[in-house]
Amino acid sequence: MIRVALPQHLRTLARVDGDVELDVDGPVTLGAVLDALERRYPVLEGAIRDHATRRRRAFVRFFACETDFSHEPPETPLPPAVAAGAEPLLIVGALAGG
Amino acid sequence: MSGVRVLVGTRKGAFILTADGARRTWDVSGPHFGGWEMYHLKGSPADPNRIYASQSSGWFGQIIQRSSDGGKTWEVPGGETMPQPDDPPRTGSNKFVYDTSADTGKPLTTHQWYDGTQHPWEFKRVWHLEPSVSDPDTVYAGVEDAALFRSTDGCRSWHELAGLRGHGSGPQWAPGAGGLCLHTILLDPTNRDRMFLAISAAGAFRTDDGGTTWTAINRGLRSQHIPDPTAEVGHCVHRLAMHRSRPNVLFMQKHWDVMRSDDAGGSWHEVSGNLPSDFGFVIDVHAHEPETVYVVPITSDSEHYPPDGKLRVYRSRSGGNDWEALTNGLPQRDCYVNVLRDAMSVDGLDPCGVYFGTTGGQVYGSADAGDSWAPIVRDLPAVLSVEVQTLT
Image 1 (tube, chains in turn green, blue):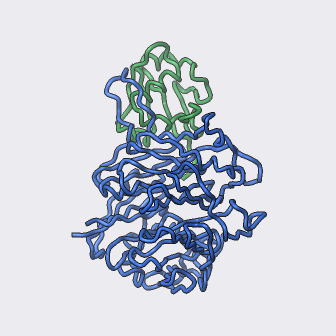
Image 2 (image 1 turned 45 degrees about the vertical axis):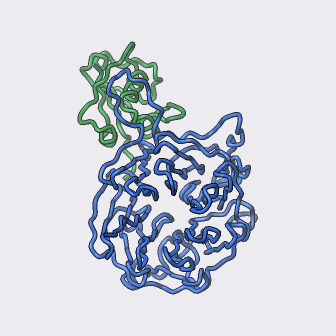
Image 3 (image 1 turned 30 degrees about the vertical axis):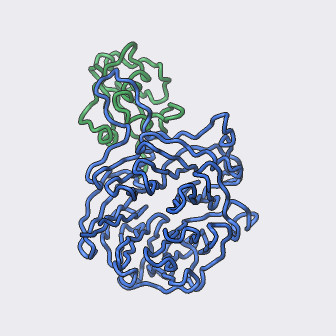
């Protein structure tokens, strides 16, 4: 079971409290977790990655185990602690604006 | 018992203001979608309990919300949580993808950027939602970068009416200060194949075949800020308005100039008359008097606040040229708010109610066609849009 921590606005949008728990088939990569998240919560499609390009939205960042995965390609494996469900993948809204 | 429901979009959420037909005591609900930019909310003329809302964020993009109970509860059409992890994927809700098909081809154009270079179309947000007059599940969306989309399934899916960008003049369209936005959609209530729209800064357009092909309707406009002041396109039209009983007569608040057309946009003439400034954003028409028009003059294109610090609505009872200042109940000193293009609306009661919202967070209402005004709310976030539903 993979855990994903969403920013507050996306929790509200997906109507979830706390971390999201997901099953991911195959290797636990950044792209596979995001695919599973959007499949379970279609409302998040386009809110994290652009609908057309599938690229990360500019003001969204990905962190796990104190490592920045924001600029890594989708096939990047996430740390074993994330794959084991001990640590969450953090999806974070960049600090900007007012 | 009649009543009104005022739908207010702000920079930080949506608010719904309701009153009975007297329009003296108001109930305020909200913020709905707190923290999000709510560019526009509008109810279906065919089913007043059906309301659509454009919710957007620089972080998380565009969301379309839908209510089927008059704004008490909301859902994202097509965005329901999947009960099982291996359920088949849904068609993407909130998905606005420009038509790039080989068949249409022409939408593969670029538009003009601020510096005059060409720039590809990039979807940013929905500025305006216009539900069909007859079908609650059909909605038009005006978006930035300027294009027109239509949903026929209650906003679960969207398809571009690509003939607009296929008009061929796209490379001459340029963004205004607010972006290259399609902000006005007027549906002709007597002719389902005809609609009007406006784009900043491209101008006004009309279709007579349900959106397949479009004609630029800007003859008579004069804009000093473009190389050819009378060009076919490139005009910064801020807003169009019509009276439903007379859809061939259009009123326009352009960047500068208040304009009128008596031939469905075939030609325009200026009706700014005695206004203290003919720069502004909003324009609307009285619900029962097709020649009674309202505007809110703004000082200039670089000073987006009322002249002399006095918030004045101007009313013409003659279709333009002769304007009277309406000041009763509005601040007449030290007022430096703006009234944005989608932030004025009228109700259908008698006397006609008129409403507008400001960037200072006030929503003013008049239950006597503008003779007197009172704030319904004073301290909302900056108001982006105001729409009114008349409930019977």
